[in-house]
Length: 323
Image (spheres, helix red, strand yellow):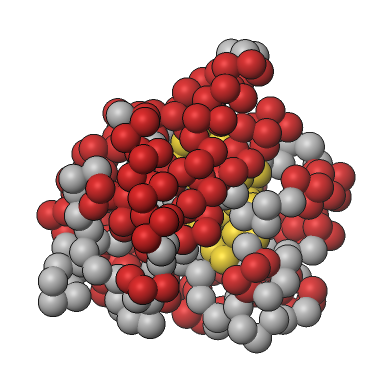
């Protein structure tokens, strides 16, 4: 199966018309993935409903320091959101950035059909690119995984997407040879987010798919080293809390200033480690400490399973040291 705009290339039309259509689609695949992209937490009201006003406030708070946003990612508790809430979250962020920042929308699901439907929703809501986690729980083999992404690519041939490798939650990594096959067959595949915390995995992907294949790091304790190793940027949970530090790391790497990049990484490291340990619960705690409470988590997530008292004090101290 090849995802090469079959529906367009099979149109009975003059060659120059088909070529013009394809060229117009290729323009849309040019997505600038270099930069810092916070993986936004999803704010809730006291009754558990989506808090759009606080989501807008969070975007406005972060926007001066970042290059774009991820909505409905792991930090945003995407499996706990309804389809309408996912649509609405994307629309709110799109409205707030008003074309000034890239909006990435998480659209992954267990089934291919639901993944396609959620990605169609993201496109309709105005997102610029989709982030599609590998199907979890069922752990499909290489053939099924390849066909899953190929079906998505063919169904939304005019909309770019990123692979999302997070084996600690999915149960397995996306094999590098699958990435290479998808890159060769899916023109709207524009890169990958890798949250494996294994730099060697990225090099195996690059060996298979090409060193010009964009990869964004999702493991916050490794952001600086990953950028120095050639990652395009970061989609970061702790960027909800310390966007200025990750922007400083990114800018230093872009300027070839390794020493400053690593110095900023060292400043960010305590918070990065606490967020890696506490996940979205730690991000919620941190935002509350910073004066922007985003509400209690939805079950089955619970405050008691987040950072303990010592962890919360460490987070408070680390944020105070940076302020």
